[in-house]
Length: 196
Image (cartoon, rainbow, N blue to C red; front, side, top):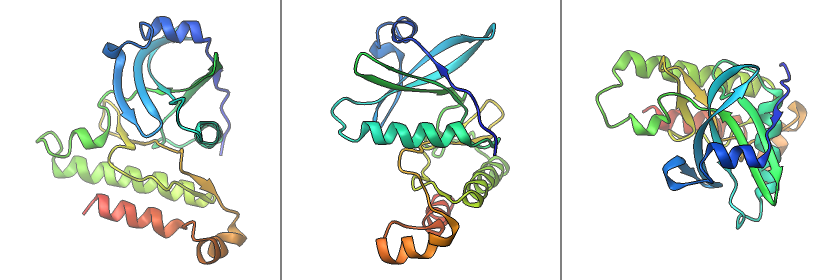
C-alpha cells in the first residue's frame, strides 16, 4: 500500500473551472451531492477531473469526506479511482478525483457497447480491487454499477468510498456478528448481484 500526496486546490480555482458550479458543468449526482467536470493543470499536465461537491444539508458530510479521502489517500491499485485533491474553504467540502473517460458502468449496461469480453474484463477488475481492499481490512459497502467508473480502455475503477470502513483482522467476525456492520461477504454479495 502506497500513500499519495493530494493537492489542496483553492476554492476560487474550482469555481472558475466549473463556471461557478453551473448546471452545464454537472456530470453526475450522488448521494452526497453533485459532481462537476473540469480540467486542472498539475505539474504542467492538464487532466480531466471530477469535483464532488458535498451537499451542505447532509449532516454527515465531514465523516463522509474523511472516509472517502482517507481511504483513497492511502490506497493504491490500478482498479481504484485516483484521488487528485480536495478543497475545504468557505464552508465547502470538495473531493477531487480523476475523471474517467467513459463515466459510470450503469450508463452502459443497457446499451450495446459492452460485449461479453468487456463485461468479463470489467468484472475481473472490480474483483481485483475488492481483493486488494479486503487484504487491507477495508470493506467498501457500496459496490454498485454507479460506483464503478470506466476509463478510455474500459478498465474498471472502483469509487464511492463514503460508506467504507476498516476493520482490524482480529475483529472481522466480531464486527459482523455483534455490531451488524457487515464484513467482506457483503461486498462479495453486492459484487455477485451486480454481475449476475
